[in-house]
Image (cartoon, rainbow, N blue to C red; front, side, top):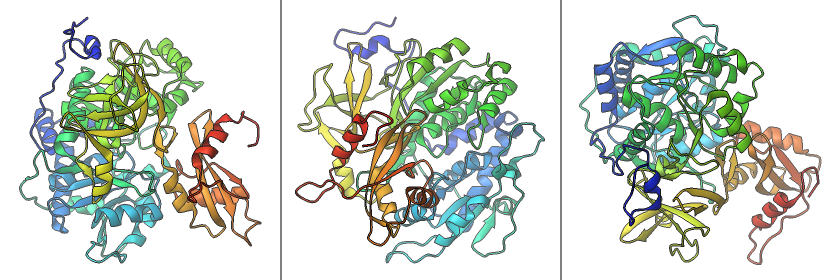
Length: 569
């Protein structure tokens, strides 16, 4: 075991063998990673999509063509471009094409609907969005929509047909949205992906540097409005390089990329990391446990990054024994604690530990990961390269002794620059310790004698549904658009499959007493992403309020969690 000086942090004693504590980061634009891999391995499979192969040379060529089209329609350096797709070769090409155009990627969950998309469009000021044909109806109403004075309107949509990437017959279960034939449309503001590639527009020089904006994923907060996290090429580079070094991956790794690329965990660990190496990504548009097992066997996948709910579903497959999973060399994830029984079953099946980590959108994924050679179960891990993580009293912000519960604060190269156009929120998100800015995570944890961090609770009001973060205030804001909703309070309810699920306590407006819970659930599902729409609606006569008139959501949350299952609160 690597020995650490007595004065060093406790977790250094359990550091992955052979790795330095400090990581020197490339001082380049992220697009350079694709250029290097394509020059090194031009004929190697970069993306395998339902058995159809895209080489690194093809990926580079397509990304440059998309960059040229973006610049042709007016995208300039620093402009934000919405990327609203499922995992696919087009997602990868679009991501790097946007960067090649010196622009900023705004990754958007394809489960979002028009009401939610409107905020991303208006807040980011994006004038171009890349959308799939099956979701065109969600984005098209926002074209040229009037916005606040001086705010740019969405002016162009680049429309993707996933089937364009299917070049080889397959017996894998291909989702209908992927196999669907191209739709015909004739509108001046819409351009088909294949037509943009065919235009072969030339690009200008690559000018964005390490400290320029690269990606701006949105995260919600207690105010209910999602906020853009400003990440530079350097902060994104930090987690992608750190991840492949931490796990000792090489260019001959084969990643099963099933985590969504729009989420920072999948973006860093299942897309940007393997591309930096020149490894191969086996991509599925949607999670399918049979397709995942088939792909591991067929393409000899060595790396699987999956949240705990995916692993639970994977292991519950009655046909799992029919597949050869012996190629797997590592399984990692996070999002929610892995149940001990599930981790034991996974180890029995594969001989591998499930290596958990912890991070957040504001830190471009991981700030903590378990050492692969010495992971602890249901543990956030230890701070990774160059991360200073501390536990402080959330009220006084003073550092607490080891073993006491407090809020995790982090300083490191992967931490965002701040929130887009929200100086107040940025100020609230950081505190200064020893002359350096630390991000307040809002998560409560303890540190054990070995320096490993363990989650205790959440300071912020957030629901974790199958690894997706759901912010109640945002859901409430959308629910208030229903004419029957007078008041709503959204809380977490236990769910054996998802860990937590969304529950709404609703006071009905007079004259709407006939509206049923199921009708509200169905309406919510139509107007917001499925992972955040309430699965449970309970009508109440009134919501408890404080003396200042604020809804006492903590009281309702505690009542829900303390109510035995099967009982009605």
